Length: 254
Length: 334
Image (tube, rainbow over all chains, first blue to last red; front, side):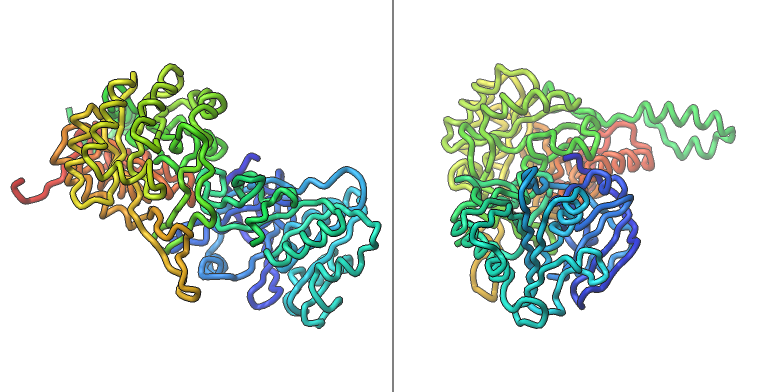
């Protein structure tokens, strides 16, 4: 990990829903070293004391792509902020799927963001990969319909307004032959990951989860973003955000 | 000799002569400050807990430009720290309940100390004990190793029952711990006081009398926040340490009180967001300052504060930072 701070100009902005946006940012040094699973921290402006973490959802040329969901005043303020944006990254560790075998990506809501980068990377090197995404409804699908990945997605909507009716984990379960042993890479809300974990334990699958936490420094310094892993605590910002799913303690799922 | 750049401006018309004079002036500007035998290249340090073990920010800033780095608090045994969530952001700073999570003194010596010692700045090791006896024991373990220059005793962490504020609010406990450390250590001892006490002067005097070389004023103040929807505290241990710009008036007042009670150097800490905040502490009587959680948002703030102090001195024609320290004009006869 060799993070840098860049003053990034916005090169494109796509509105997905009223509170969900895809931003393309010119950040050549971050783009050059970013790996799928890593994130950046963006300064939301003077009124806010801490940066806000966002997964890198793609990196190519001089640009990175991030998915921003307005969840509070900080993210709302960031969207109003004048360019350039002050970006720290890339931070954290990447997904590390095995060199052979099938890979299955499972994303819930904005958790799809780092998986989109991973899908593109795996697709480029010719790996067999399936990409499941869950959303509450058709209007909340976290991927731009004009994005090349869109036609490859297996989408579940809780209310049945698009694709499979039900949760993304139910969709995965219905599509997964009993003998299949894909490597799972997942990111999403805690209840989704918890359900996925149960399925993985039941089917004897292995894989990695990308976790979220409130975060201050992003650099492994303040110890603020600890999660229970391996009987102790590990830091989402530095040891993670990606952890082997079976090392995340039961304490996390309560 | 006091050199005023304004005079150069008015009396020297030849630009090249001005430049030469100006560069001489630059060389003369002195930001160095001392803590007992330890000479710092400038008065800006990192606060414990906000800079890890010292090397983490090296990809982002030139650490050799700092006056000193202070490590995260080290304890005899590794500590896992408090259960998450551990932080809560406020409009005016943050609450933390980390619980002194750290790798322990032995792993620090084995895996970090050598790397930290090569950063090109003074290294101050911050330590805390569960029992009073742990402090001299930590010094006994650290003292034989090269690579650092001073100790800071954390007797003021609000997030652990022991090793915490209980020591820091008791002048006798502070005296005993400081005395045991200052007689055992070959390096200067800095004692980091708590602001969670109405009158910090008794504790400060106890530390000075027991052989402290300097005092850091101060640690975080006790704070809390409530989730009104669920009627639960935002952090599981209810109370936490508050840091951020709201700390400045509180710790500045503590520093002002302590300045009048002791003669050893004081290190201002709490709510410093830019060089103006740092200057408030220096003018009030701090010989140096520490910057903590402001680094999380802007890692470059440390260097910006050094440049800002330099710019202020240049503008005011102050050659030596010691000519600025404690120059507060109160207007009342003290």
